[in-house]
Length: 577
Image 1: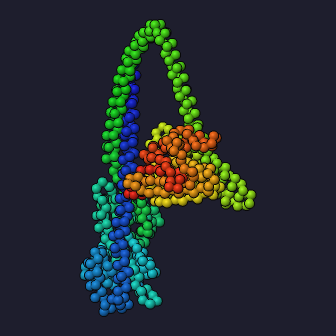
Image 2 (image 1 turned 180 degrees about the vertical axis):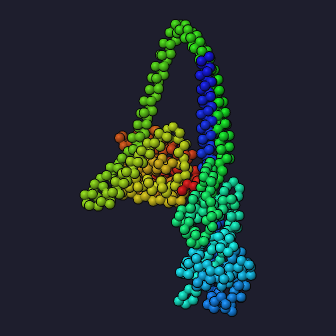
Image 3 (image 1 turned 120 degrees about the vertical axis):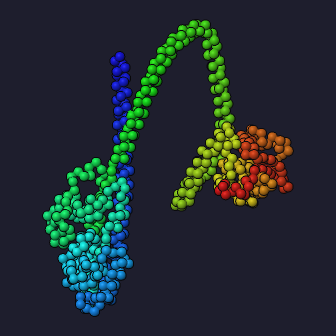
């Protein structure tokens, strides 16, 4: 019974923990997403408000430069141009969509207005107390938000000074209605409002919030509001404390207006989604717990059955072990014999590879010695650059020797895996560079024809070995006959193959040696001059690349080796590069 109670309590705790974590995670994600959307919306509302106001910002400056406006200000309220100016202001106001347009003289008296024909006309009213007039009369662009003292309607005022040479004679004023801006605030899912520096809500998509204060107005701000007649302080009451509690309240300053934009979003949907996610997580946790209980119970029963089987198996093994001693001894003898055979095979492979490697590394090691001697000689005479060049060649040769060993091992295991597009020109450049010292010592003449632009399928290092072997044999043959070596290497395309011939001016190939020329360990050189593996390895390299190699005599009696390799189609040469 106690075990069941513990199990039930554990499952309940798992369910509650999963539900709480799911609720918290969903709530945090929902608030973060709501905050991100709110930040984007605030930026949109700021740009919308500024955009609407800036539509009228330039009008006051344009009106102030109009010749009729200037003339009327200079002649005064009783001048002959006032009637025409009233009509023009009325027309301008209707076309621009402004709330009011009017002109003040240097004393702040309204001499003409777009509402001149209405009972609450501004004409004759003095607005010298307004901050927008005080800024304009000093030469600045006047900006001000407040209630109209005549109309009682909220608006934003732009005032621009009217100039004549040497002085300011008045101001042109444009009043912008803010109701159009409020209509563009999203009314659905959010409360949007703007407060001024005193904390008074001057614009909002909620009419109940307009001309309310976020908190009691500070005495300094109250004094400025009374002085500028911006609002009726008796009608501005603070908002109820905690009005936006439990909601997401975001704000962003607006300069140069000195305002702050507020966006208040309800969290009801976020909470509902979080509760749904919490319930789902709790249910999943309960299901996981139940599944775990079922698995544990089945595991316990399975362990019991396995233990029974293990006991039976141990009994059976004991009976079988007593009757299979001879068979075990026979198996051990067989294993030892197999191990001996494997070891013998390893030793044979090691011997064969050692012979191949000694032949492969003979020529690079000779070149390394030559380049090292040259480097020391150049250092001795102060030619540091030439010494560095020889040492760099030594470095390349050591790298190439390591690559050669890898290719020989790969050749023995999977000889066809290394074929790739290879330029004959690159092969010959590396080969001649590697054998340069030997060629120069022999004063040999080597000519190349048709090599540079051909691409074959093969491996660069292994084909380089073939060419090194053929050129080395040609040098030895000519020198052995007491001649200055002359070697001609010619390449041409024949159908789908590239044919390469290597001719020398040596004594040629004896008929009795021609049949055995490519056999392993066959050599026409003196004992100690070679192992007879070079042409055999070259034969196998050519075969692995799908090519052939053959020997014959030239018309002049020297030796000719003819190589054939698959030609790479010119359309694939770009890929080879």
